[in-house]
Image 1: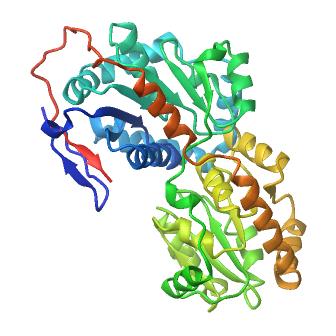
Image 2 (image 1 turned 90 degrees about the horizontal axis):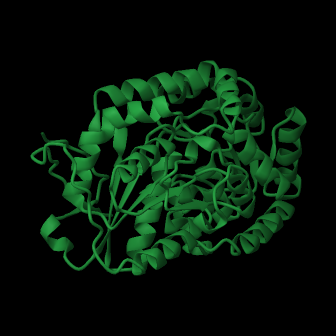
Image 3 (image 1 turned 30 degrees about the vertical axis):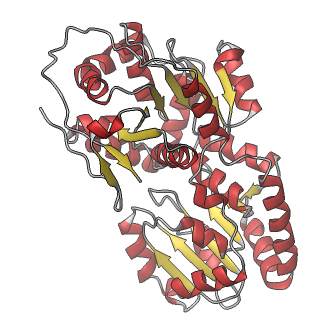
Length: 419
């Protein structure tokens, strides 16, 4: 049986026979929101940038192994989050101190076991890093059955739900000391937790000079004027009927860039509104150039997803938060608000205050941004990757894979990616 996967544009394929002498890191994620996979890819890029002796492979496990079923489940989850966010919040909070139960892990084991073992046999990783609870639970159960590849779980938010916790995780990589304390409260041993921050792509740590910013503005047809970047995450979850309409009332004095992600329906809806047809209002879909848009923006209005907030922190851009989804987004919002890097949109006054600052006191906003950039330097951009490399250096021999009863002829034809 073969499974195909579409690699990002520009990826190069490294044949398996060229892996000799290199440490192999397999990164597993899921597409429940874009942040989990973004973290995996960011860590993969950082690892390869720091060391030529590491090969990486990022796989969204469910989509890879069940390409027909996974999109249906993910779409159902997206609709639930969009239509019934309170239900999602209730489930998050009611299960906060409970790991995935035995029945759930058994079901995941049944669905993924054979194919997941095939992936591992084919790639022979020295280490597995999971950026989502589901693959972490799957690999944890495989380790319980005899798999001897170290499992590292990277928590991609500023909270620690018990669903992330599995008994056979080697180490947890977390965003802050506060999240470490929450894991300790869940019973995880202190020596199993590393505070590394959430990895973002190295390009988010690059600060652009004036000439570079002029070039970016020209590229996106933007003017050198107060600019607000508005994002709704990979799924384009915005507030078009309230906050966004309020924002665009300032379009004579302020330039807006709305990124709707994969939400093509929302992009078309915005473009049909007269308010979004102003010369200073730009509406774009999914883009891989968010870092550049942050470079030329003075303020970010966004949902408080873990990855988006971390990327904005790296760029030192102040944030205004849409009403967060119940659960981890509430915790993300609380963390960044308490640290002074952003504030929630609690009423139209929150928007009006910042728009007035941009129009009448822009230098104050720019000064605040410079302060944020200096503070952000405390969060080392490569801490997570360096921790992984340190752990890899302690592995003196290839990891042995347990002999399983699964048919060894079941395999996957895959190659490592080199982004």
